Length: 266
Image (cartoon, rainbow, N blue to C red; front, side, top):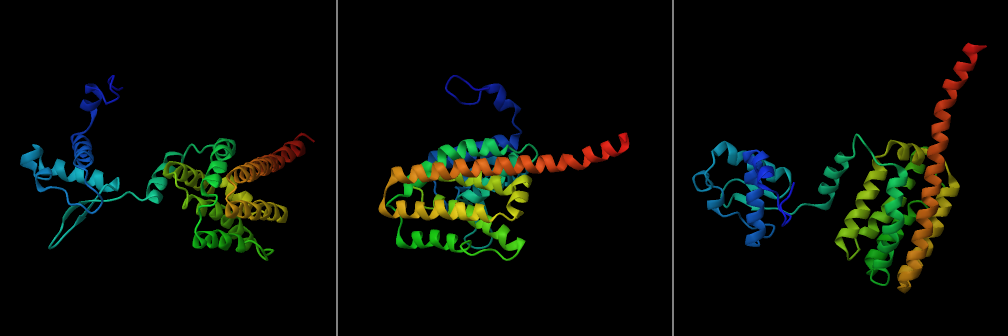
């Protein structure tokens, strides 16, 4: 529950463990003081007698902040506790765990991808450096040739996702970039998606190449609306394919059971 100003109410604060409450207080102090990554936390923030907690509580609070990626400790001369920057990849790994046992559906993910990835593509139109453009082209080159083994086929599927991941690295909107990257991470984690990626499907590779080559051309000339249109079509086709393959895998998994039941009844 929250108070009218949006802050946690008194009852919620009372339910917090003392280390968690102290960790929250230190986080707020970091924000209020305008500290940046690499800045050292003032000694009086870390003195048990100043914050009126035991040394054990203080140690636990610092462990909480370190686990969250907000601080780092250094020993020796010039050591101490310093503000740290949370890396997007670390944050995404934590969020992945949120859906570890109750993963979203393919439709859930593509509902967002169809809305967000067209905007992602439009956001980089006409703004990529030559180096960034070459990075995207390098992703495509990994699946231009026909794969010779199942392992190569799987690697090519992941390279297609890497193309989208590379787009997020150049997006000027950090929230849009993070969200799109998170959706890609969810796809990589889904068991059904991994199984589909292992399947041999030359038409899927050709379709992906077609969309991404067109998209690169639109990005290079700076046509944001065309980028939106191409990426939206790409996402619609990708969702259709993934749902069809997932349904086929579901039916094939049921067929052996049906056959055995028929044998018994005969």
